[in-house]
Structures are given as structure tokens and as C-alpha cells.
Image 1 (cartoon, rainbow, N blue to C red):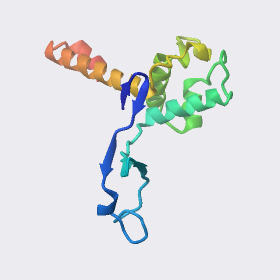
Image 2 (spheres, rainbow, N blue to C red):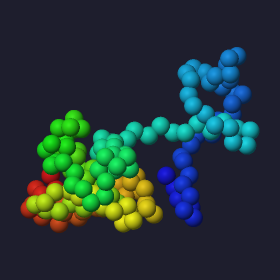
Image 3 (cartoon, helix red, strand yellow):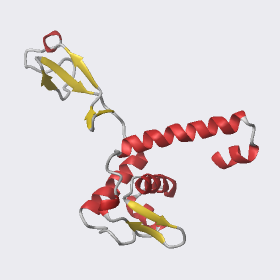
Length: 157
């Protein structure tokens, strides 16, 4: 996803509709969603969301629906993972993303508290934050491997 002046543009494939039209007006060989832009059909690319992104988005929905209002604690990690039907590792990854984006504050030994919405890092989407984190993680792993630091490599694994 690219940003330009605060706007987001979706990565799309543009095709000429008449080259792929069937008699019933659908694309051949299967039905897909499409949008008309300037006389051409634009088909959004399908992106698979990772599990921790789905978990993060679900927790955001629960916060927005006031199930977990600002200032309240989320259930303990083990309990929340069980309720959501996910592993604790996937939940932890989602919680890290939510903390980076300002939705929650992780208090060691106390739990996870929902932030006041005014503290949100609203200039960035979760996808942008995750992309940045993946770049940083891979760069750190590469540096650790180049320096042959066995302790750091073991921590990364």
C-alpha cells in the first residue's frame, strides 16, 4: 500500500473489460469483484492477512465496540488466547503491534491496559507498522548472523 499526502492507494490490476467479457457480463473463467475507473475495469489484488493481523484487528473491533473501553485491562494472556482460539505466540505478536500503534499499553507484571484513543498512532496503519517491524526484524537477524553472535542468534530463534 502506498501513501501520498495522507491518502492510500490500493495495489490493483487493470484489465480491458471487453477482452475478458462473457455473454452474461461476468469475467471468464470465474467471478471476481471489480470497479470501473475511466472506462477500464480495476480488480483489487487479493492479500492474505496473517493471523496476528486478524487478532489485532479483532481486538481493535472489541475496543471500538466498547467491549474493552479505555482504561480497562484485557483478560490475562492465557485466557484471552483461549477465548480467541489462538496460540499465545500469535496473541503476543498482535499485542506488540497494538502497543506500537498505541491501542494498548503492556505493563510487565500487571497486564495489558487499553489506551485512551487520543494516544493512537493514527498516522500509520497496522499494515504499515507491521511492514516496518518485519524490515527491522530481518535486518537485526542479518546483522546477528554476519557478526556470528551465537547468543543473539539463539535469542532470535
